[in-house]
Image (cartoon, rainbow, N blue to C red; front, side):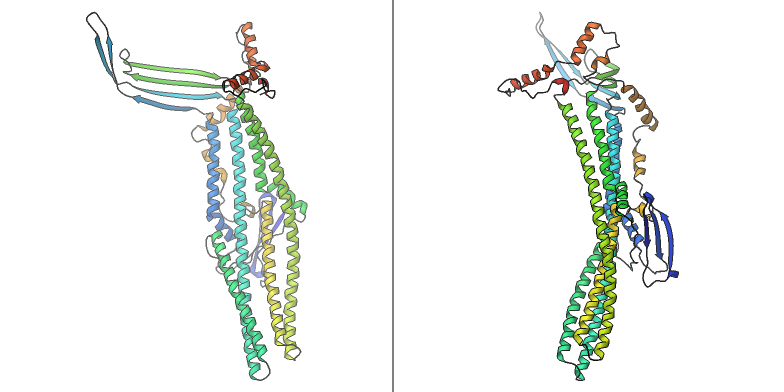
Length: 552
């Protein structure tokens, strides 16, 4: 489903010949229309602020480094199935004296040796029961989840930057209104003093004017402090002080709540990350199951030694051995790990459902807040317009003597409050729009199509994916081995299949078959023996809750 986002950079004081219109296509089918200002000297736009945060924010740079760190887990998983080799060497000194009896008395034989040797060995895993494949799937799901977490961090940083942007605009406007109010009240005081001098006013009028001036100065001081705070937050987010900020953008969001929830389910990075975590849980189950299967590896070594004994001055040894390891008993460890992985997968599934419901709830809440903010904006605009008209009327009525100075001061205060409310409501509407885009997953650099070089998280992954191994070997050889490995049996359930086609006599095959399916009492027998040795034997014999071995 597509949503249309319209970004307008408009001001009520601008004319159409000062505007430019551009259209771009964002991600997830979002069409971005931008109406921007031209020829504003040294003005910083909303897009420029986001670009500065995108390129310089330390938290975002740290998260990118974290993602590169997680990329290495895929390389580490691949390394479990790659060739490993090491070289070892040793040297030393030995001095021995051997005393032997004889007819002429004991005879001593002394020898001094300086043995030294060097060895190179390698291990090439051929089949590990699907362990490497599961590790790779788990690592890949983790990498994809981390990418969504990076996008979520990016959106949150953009949200902080955009909020700081409109906060500065609001507080600059509030400061202007407060300062203008002080100037107006100063003029009122001067007028009251002049009327008192001419005998047309009273000291009460002067006191009322001075009281309002003091209150206005308090409000101006508070506005200055709030502006300084907003500027500090802006510097933290963007990296430099704000300068002549252009009007904040406006966004046309989805038309219905259902449409917004559908877009959020498809694009919200936290929800998508939870889905990738589910995939990692599936891989964890396969990883646990691989512990039941045999492993096959090719081991080789070459060793050279000198002066190792008096009878052997130099020797060379080389070997290549195919090794098969078949797990039989693990003390319940493998079964416990498998059950734990299954429980973790169930937990991750419920966490995804929880995240999905949370997204739906947050969209519904923001939808209600957005509707309230739009209605409040219309009402605030009406209130400000009415207050302005009321002030003009009160001033005219005062001139004809039907209103007092206090009435004028009250009308001015009412207008100021209406304008302050309008500024706050406008800011709230902007911030809710930013929050809505963040929840939809459409408030990142690529969705907004910022004019900057994008950080591509796949670049690092591609560059490190095959490090330490030739790409051709790493890509094709494990696949061929895996096709062979899939034919190998599970242990101990199908161990008899491993030797069914060999030349083992039928009588011996029966013994192997018996070993592959041990009697149910064997597990309890072993456990009871351990309990006896460790003085943990149950009071009334074998515990009834011990599972048979073939069910573990």
